[in-house]
Image (tube, rainbow over all chains, first blue to last red; front, side):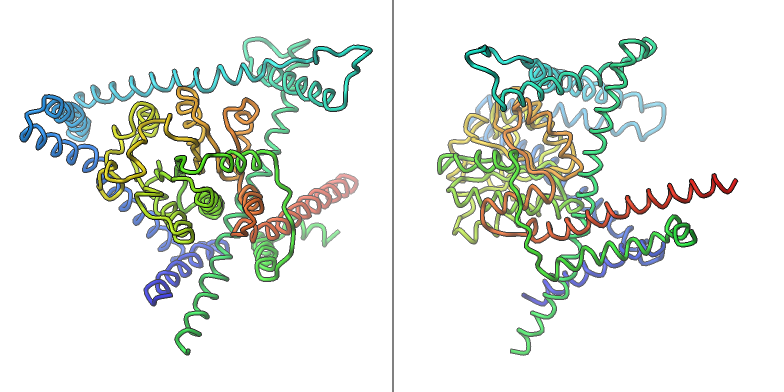
Length: 242
Length: 276
């Protein structure tokens, strides 16, 4: 381990302890670490987004294609460079919203473009990739074909049938619970109440997983403090003494 | 009754301290708790294990430092598995702050297996707007990733010469702490039938079970538990396996807190009503 790595580990450990100090009570050390994190993240986002978006997808592609057009006269290269002017103009138009009511209406055009694009992609994706496959997966048999006195139902078959029935009842009950146009009385009331049971089980599972997730974060940090920070420092000193 | 009332109003800092100790001790003293591998994790393992050597897998880094303790062990385990099987890895991501974590995991695994950049793995970096990128890869990956994260043209890498779209990608693993797995499913599976595996945080995992039931997801690694199960299949313990004993003791403590809190609250409530 180099001294630079160890220094980095010490900075990370100090900031971790500073954040953990909030568990005792709010304090300037915590505030410093919090602001530092927000600032560094924001700066990292700006620099890398500018690099991966503006440079890699706009400037570099334009220059490459323009050079190719100049050296070979390729019309494909020419149009691949020219087409980039459209998103550039749309991007500049988006910035006009900062310059007062006289010009900020111009930003509505690129916003309309992105909303249209997003809605188009979103709707097709939701139907093709979510709604239809999920509905299809709910259309399950509640009886196994071929069961007779000669071939009685087996244990695994019973489990599949019960599982399918539970799934279908759960989906229908939950859908009824979110059906707001009529009062939940009679059949609707029964369906709605069964829906609540399934929703509560779902919440319980989600809560259990959330507890595991939060404890995992604590484990990760404590493992870092114990093994990487304290353990790493001891190993570094041992190497130095040798 | 005084003790029960004290319990009901216990200082939360005492709870934090007890929880920290309960998590810390199993990290210092090894408690062997062999994991039971669940079906979604086994399916994920089998999906990677049955790919032909030389096949290309995409590892998408859709998490960052805030969820690294959960997603990083999964990333390390799957990168290790992929290189063991002789697979080629394309690393990309939709969270720019998370990509370096993915790169660290892959470079460590590559060093262990003597794999070289450009021949066995590439890092294509970040591109904005995940939906258009995912749909775009279905046509030609070069439309969005003409160069790697350092600006080197992808055609200069031997492993990328025959990779154009999802037809050339055997499987895709999204490590996510948000909705990215669902987006991959909706577009990469929905439009192109890509084989998808999810490696997600515990918070996200319950939302993805319907996709397992509908077979839109091949396998799922949920939280630290998923990572530890995958590590046990690989027979290579990492943070997932190391953290599970602490996970167990912490869960037992939380269950104890819930039981004690509920019972104490009930007794205090009954006592107060009778007194009135």
